[in-house]
Image (cartoon, rainbow, N blue to C red; front, side):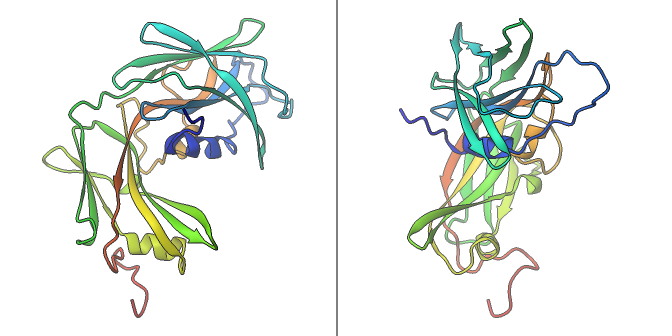
Length: 272
């Protein structure tokens, strides 16, 4: 089993690297840790960043002295720790390959040696009956992503992989801010691949493209246009002894076949 998590975990790792929690240097606090990450029922590995909530100590590349556990489905596992370097400093990442199931609720607990803890309950959505359709692939403009049976979407992304001088390079475009509800109860968004490709990676060969839909629960922050990266700056409901956000999602992937010359209104370049 690969220790490389799918898209949400990967994006989360990049985002948490620069995630700083605003601090009040005067007010007293019993906060133990800062938590950031996701539980994704479609990932083979779960990742959560756990950092000591300290006001003056600079980030250290040494392992965090904490025990992090994930409980649910009648069992509990202890997460392993890995320290990764980022441009903003070292990130302390805790991971497990124990499976996470849709429709279940989990508790994540980080415990310090002095007994202080940060804990949060994380619901993972039940996706029974959820349908994701990509309408107009390779034919119509725009390509429409339609999701039926989901209460809330954490993100909708168009992901394009290009050949950059013999190396694969991926560009991600989030459409979560443009998702709208329909009278039939579905959630829909229009994707314009030519605009995405032209603005992100002009002049490079497209190798493949796909749509990824992150289905989540009503407890996910309802801020309009909040991408999966931005959510790491939110505060989890019910998080005790800590700050940050840990959410639950189920990811659905679909092939994206860009139709020719599919530009968003007002973005078509001259001569296209």
